Length: 399
Image 1 (cartoon, rainbow, N blue to C red):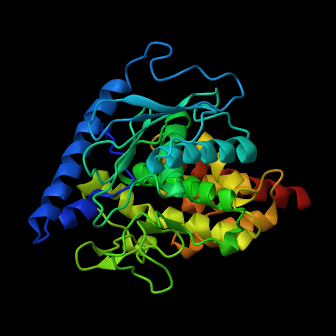
Image 2: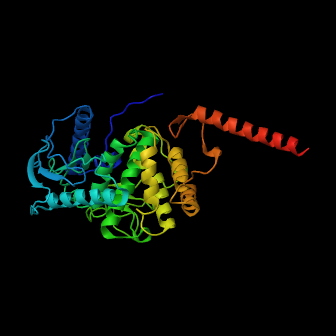
Image 3: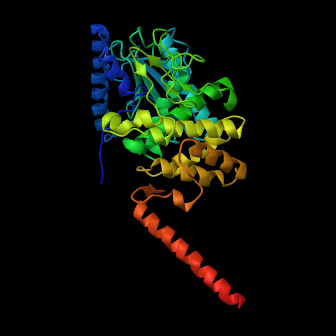
């Protein structure tokens, strides 16, 4: 059955706002409901913008083939986009933290994709990177709206400004990369993969900017974004939005609640909320990537990151976790990778409850590499019949 849902590609999961909306503090409740309402409005804008070709230059100058092009605007705590231009490519720092952090974060994301993956901006064709800061009043989110980035200032109580975390910027811009590549649908498992790929590349943006190896990375998404009013779920680190290596430990707070992300398929969450749990169940593929990167050694963008990038380019819009796992295993067996990488990928998926490396991993009724699961099952049966036929022919030849 086909399903159409309008995506809500925000870095802060709806379950956090739903929890905050139950606060006894009327101010906290009001801000949470305001953020949910504004995010819904942006969803509607994105649905419209996605079908419109804007005039050349509407969102800034056209980038040359291999040039980085950034333009930062301010919405002045309103909601008009893009707003007033405050800094362009090559311009001097504006002296405003949000403006300059957005400028640097866009540049860091472009640099990772260009240097590590040979990708020229989000569309691989020099798409200008546009961002609007000071969006809304104390807006608690950052979003890619299908055309540009927008950043709220945070409420100052639980959230800092949303430009403060470079991985958050990389996360949201990667939704743009997914938009131009696999086009993963934003519901259930394909939606959780969509969110996971954004966390994967957002984390690599941070690691690349720090020249940090995988085993030294914190694997936290949005650390520094939450204020010290929020309690962490792990005494080893401060609060964050998500933990890729240890899903479910990013926060554990009386107001925020406990981080609900599962770290294994045994904890997979079903239901209609959050487009079928896209921000929740993304913890499963997140952990698989973090484990694969750490176990492969070295820099994440040189090993596991390359495998995940090639996988993103090949996945179909309705891909399931099993499809992503199978495809990463397949890619890991190709040049220039090999058996060591395949083993690391296989072990990583096994630790989150997903088997790869055999036809038994395919399930009827799911998409497999873009094929209907029933077709994949028939292919498996044909393979088994061919195997048996080969054995019969071999035995007869020996007589």
